Image 1 (tube, rainbow, N blue to C red):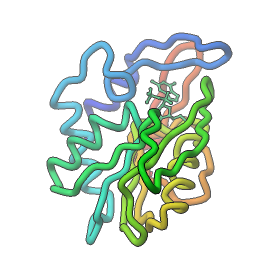
Image 2 (image 1 turned 180 degrees about the horizontal axis):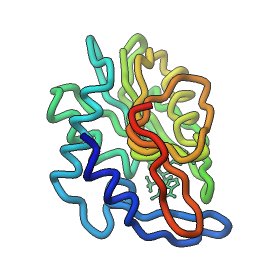
Image 3 (image 1 turned 45 degrees about the vertical axis):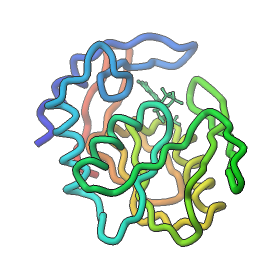
Image 4 (image 1 turned 135 degrees about the horizontal axis):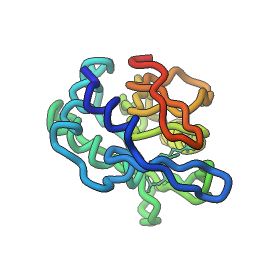
Length: 183
Ligand SMILES: O=P(O)(O)OC[C@H]1O[C@H](OP(=O)(O)OP(=O)(O)O)[C@H](O)[C@@H]1O
Ligand SMILES: Nc1nc2[nH]cnc2c(=O)[nH]1
């Protein structure tokens, strides 16, 4: 079921970002080209594994959760909420710090009501810094996080909650190796 995702990961290029081996893939970068068949495969797999019963909103983080969240939203008819890197200063906006293996920034949550049942999705989890920030913001807004699903898990980060992943990978100087599926 994940043939396209696995084959494309195992042949994708990698660059160094400081000490960090950064893989470049259509799902995580939109580069060089995101084929509709790959996006469909990923979105359909997410629909299959997640518990979407009674979910009010799909939440993702700018930028590379957006295409996946959009596909998921169009399949399920559940509205999409995007945590932005831009501050809007709307009433109730929640700001959280985000750190990854190669960057630090801030994410802003708007449009989530107390008691909303949400699922969180993203393209990749590596240090877990982004997901921790998203979860912290949702908790502050009073939402109930009912499920979390990420396409690619790199390593074994702990964000304090169960995270479903479609594929697990290891990255070394030779490139990406897929080590498990549907965890
Ligand atoms: O588990 P982590 O170490 O936090 O890494 C995962 C995050 O890294 C990327 O986002 P990035 O902040 O690079 O922004 P982008 O989506 O705009 O590329 C990716 O889209 C994830 O959100
Ligand atoms: N594309 C890409 N995104 C990431 N986000 C966190 N780590 C990575 C990585 O190695 N590649």
